[in-house]
Image 1 (cartoon, rainbow, N blue to C red):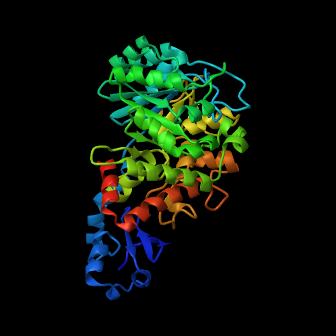
Image 2 (cartoon, helix red, strand yellow):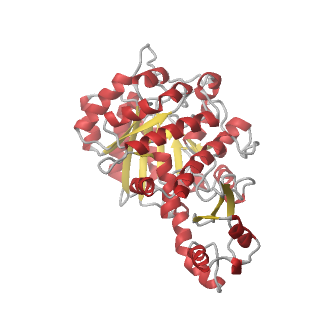
Image 3 (spheres, rainbow, N blue to C red):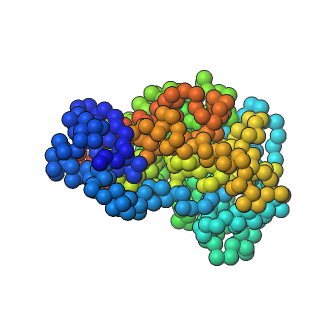
Length: 464
């Protein structure tokens, strides 16, 4: 008997995948045998390989279920974890005027800062999560504008954590970083993610100061300050139309600054990015050309002595090669809204996720879960908003996703669907986000299909 699978034509072969994330490439004759449940026509060695990858059940259904259970737990491991990421939006003010800012939109008319008492109430809720390990992330606007509240959160959480292990992460443009602030971050093991869009031409175009001039030099200065203290430092890249001709230069900048990876991100059509889409946006096809050029160059840079990886590819490859799901909120089913992450806004409002509070910045509070003054962790999880977002992001039940060959590896964002289409469910078959993820996966599976040992070895090193 044949297990359920999806398929897609790849040149002269067909890619097949199942819910466990296992994959294979087969010819048309084998595909026809699988579809018709006539496995007697399949060559014995291939049949055994398909059985080992759970495309063929074998003689006993019960034995099959017992065999696949641990692997299903691996690919769906995020379902066994409670909310672990708590985002504190300390302010929506910023000293930069980024062209794609998602903390504000043209309709935003208020600026504010989270006070220490509001922050502590948010920490109390975060500590109610059943999971042992939690991450508290500081965002904005520019969170260093409200550094006193960062300190209040860290010190309050450390004093009240009990048995929990807390990781702190700061997302910043680093322009306000001082030696004293860096010392505090190092002393409290705060990890840092700097917004870095590439070389000075791209970064300064995307991320100018409000008073004029680019912020690239300030970001580089902050990076040097943090590296002197061996602070765990990552970088966040966002792709605009300005970025498209500079794939090589962007990668070179990351390498020169000492990073060993880059996370190539498409624009999210929220906030200023939505308001200015005609000027800074692009088609899925344009982004994929940029992404493939970047990935080709990254693969050329890798050698026996150098490992430089790309973030999206690494997340996909862990599922494809290792059969294990990294808990990345946008590439899981259901998505991470509320059940993976929760966002506390500076005024005490609580949202499903960072994207949910961005929609609120645009004047729509559909993804507000409650507030820190009257909510508990349990009431947030039990809310109608949480349940609705979970139900609308289960790929296994979504038309166009449930029968897609990439269903085991992908994810949808109902918040972005709502912002773009005014509906939690996308109204367009294969919308831009779908085309981008599908294009990334097409690229990776073509590499795997080619069976180029050197390149595949490089990809495997990325996920070790």
